[in-house]
Image 1 (cartoon, rainbow, N blue to C red):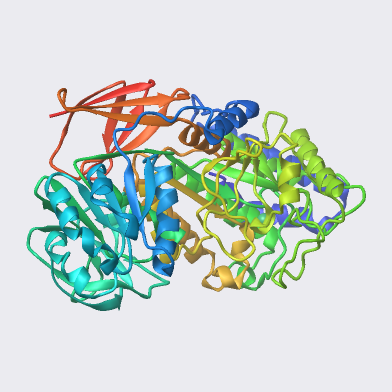
Image 2: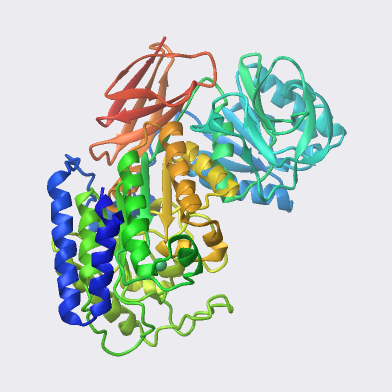
Length: 629
Ligand SMILES: [Zn+2]
């Protein structure tokens, strides 16, 4: 597609026009480009996307979200509650509990907290699942025999991290399947012995921020090891042991950062016979600053590799490559408009008059099934003078007044409407992922429906969860990974999110190619392969994932967050009943079969295998019946 721009003759024509200068010639170039575009369009069969996932009205999202929060709506009946046992005033326990609580609540697993000292025989015996996040096992020593009896009778126990090594922990070795244990060791990579996470067995995953978080252990032969360390003498990182009628899952990973929540979600889901939890099912790719005026930056590597201007490089090389890549992988980009690269933060915002690049790139993006959203009038994040950049962004200026931020946003929305009248302009990406509370308030007064900032917290970045905001009904659709150089940390975070939410979000910034910190020196041929390899990895590891635009992802997140599931096990019928409240056309769930149970049939939905023990369920109605063999 668009190969004609690479032919020397076409380049020469383009260059000659540019040398003449003046509005007349710019107009001629624009017409030539549009003509070229139309010729190309006439020869290409675009895939028609029959149906797009749509967002429900904002006031409805707001209302449903607040019903849930206010407790006005009765909680759905649940078979059982998970007990999360923590240790008061212990830093590791506190961090682990803070990591695990959102995992459980987003998996819609009802849970309650219990301090280690409060754990009694009565509390243990009324639980079906217990997760232990305790560093000093001596705090549990009174309850060991009760716990062991409870597991043997059918209880499911998870040890969330290796506790301190002492005699008390040793007396739990038998049910955990531990023969011997050494010191805590640094594990700098994980290898999937069993394919328990989508994409897990496609490669080994190195851990960039590793520390001595895992315990060196040797296990009895009756443990099923799923993950081990990458080393000559691998250390078991995640295993399960069947004990009587119950199970023990030991999660020896030990790092509790947001980027790795999916590993702990996988561990949790391995308890018992099966685990069912809602997921988003969506992959979105964003292109920030696109369309925009020609980005500024250091041209040295573009000159070195292509001997052309930044503007020519973007239209003749970069866009061809990212466009073709998306076509090959079925990706639908969401481009985010920047109207101007000036630093104006006050006064009247002049309309951009040089629109040829906007029209050319924007229309190609739309014709290929993509979507256009808003990044800003310029690249100044929506913050006021009370915002402290902490010397991190030298070139940025704060806005003088809330209304100037609003005026600038209205200007870029009007500008984009004029260029792309059919677009709904619903997605907002904050420049440099920086956004203030005041800026966010202004966004909620516009037609924008979704904010796509970042998922992983870092410095000044505005970090989000995948959810609907109770404050105003805006949908949060954070981007997990970014850039062309997808490093080990990003791959592990992406893997984690495929398991936890069955979601993948990526953003590229055209000026990544110019920035040495983001890999510019490696050159575009190497960088573009980085992104393409990620698309390959995603396509193979998560072959069932839906490729969505930003608004569609918001619509998927809206369903994921607002639809609540009730699980009821029917022992006599050997089946699981799932009922959904606020069901809107569809709901996606992951089903893990960690034990021996196998599915016979599903009524009310359909099932697709994702890994050997993980299935993706699409619910077509508000009641689904899963019949086991
Ligand atoms: Zn940007």
